[in-house]
Image (cartoon, rainbow, N blue to C red):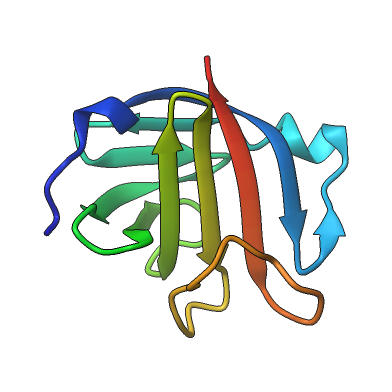
Length: 117
């Protein structure tokens, strides 16, 4: 647990996303570039560390925010890395880790699909 997965490192460009059941407009997607490198991340104005666990299904990822407007928060997430790209589903409320790649209305679930830059 906590082991960095080298294949996930790189710049990622958001190509599709939803927040609480609402599709994100293209302008919002352009603000969601993700940089992952050596256990650290940058997403918009937030930065911090990531903790990955690829030994569970779905694979888990915790965003530990150390800089930016959400500093001090931990965002439980799941991810799916494939040749097609990266899917990330987060619970922005921090209440619980998602168990599926869905962002239903009435939740603070954030689902985004990325392609490698």
